[in-house]
Image (cartoon, rainbow, N blue to C red):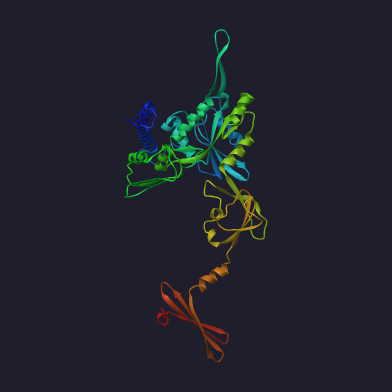
Length: 453
């Protein structure tokens, strides 16, 4: 029996099992088994070559955004509208068969936008090049899930006498949204979620240590032990800092989950009513647009900028005006936004020469503010780096190992200077210098016997 068949069998068993207090341990074990099988499904087969038929493209710019959606929802048209890059669009499905990149120039930054082929239900199992599409989505900083708003239709059933007996809403786009979310989560992508506050560490001995800082309602010690034993883990330390679920614990044990933000983009709003547009626009993390009429594209760009959390920091050389043409772009989700992150972004060795920095902007209490390496920068701040004095640094390095200095008069206008340097590796070194008639005569020799221990 293959991995996919085993997953289907376990899912069927979970569907048949009634959820109650008596079956929660059994359901937890089944969830752990499915997570292990899905991880094995994503692993490349042993003995296969390194090459493949993927369509990964090189990262470029200050961030990467992936377009995910079913076929013929307007992904290629949206890429053309935002970037100017031509991506073939037609009225039939699967027009795009590979990854097409484009660049969005917005707020002095460059954001890479990827038009990926449409995925269908079962993409996580390899249907329709779904694995390649999801692999590219994992490397993105933001996912735009494009949905067809025109497929949300109102239908009314009429009785034989002409009176309405039932009215319901067929929300196909909402069903597509749930299918896409399920396919992405099955391969380790967690949309609009944060990592669970669970500390987990494997140990060599000592058994399993289970603790929590608050009462737990979803997981207890027995269920945690059973899940860890399913992974053949018998020595570990587990600490719950929040009321997490079984799925959260499995995600922490797996350790390969990617938590990424997602914006739901409802396209083709020009063919539905204003009330339906208002309902879609009020949904969390959602933006309504029309690529055909170029409606609300500015709102989509601002929403992308807000979700990516990019921070522009401008540099100011000493004695000069700030350079507003080429900002240093930081991100709280990728590396951080402190002064230390700013220096490392310029050069990794710059941090050694920084004495302090001067900051102008919303993060400063006054202009300018003397800040250290831990200061958190905000968007459009101006930073001037003040370096340490090179001569003072060198002089400190030279004078630090001096152990003793002596000066003696030799007569006839000459002086003798003796300096003892103490080094950890060779002990003491005596340097003799003689000043006579304006000439400096320097003699040096190693003389450990004259140095006190």
